[in-house]
Image (tube, rainbow, N blue to C red):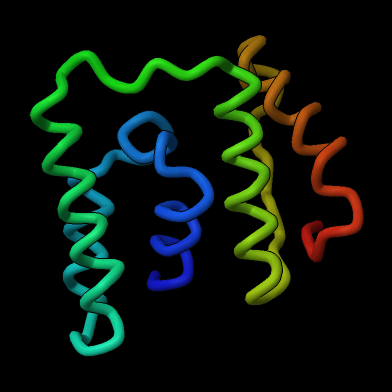
Length: 114
């Protein structure tokens, strides 16, 4: 959990509340944080979730910017340990999801991601 939250905060803050519900992420992060070293990233996440709750309009980012943040988060996580991405029911994927997959396929080459 610490690596995931830190990667999202540093590489993809706009993905929180767009791809990952911020409040649910915060609850899971709080339950896994043991204090000390985790206090900094947990405080950052709490502040971000609080700011987002005060801004009901959300973040306005272009699709390419969001896709790039998604790729950077996955690359950061893959530097910590190898990743396996499992895809299911692709026949139901919408155009945006397919576009994200093509973007990731181009950007994640050479990363420790299968």
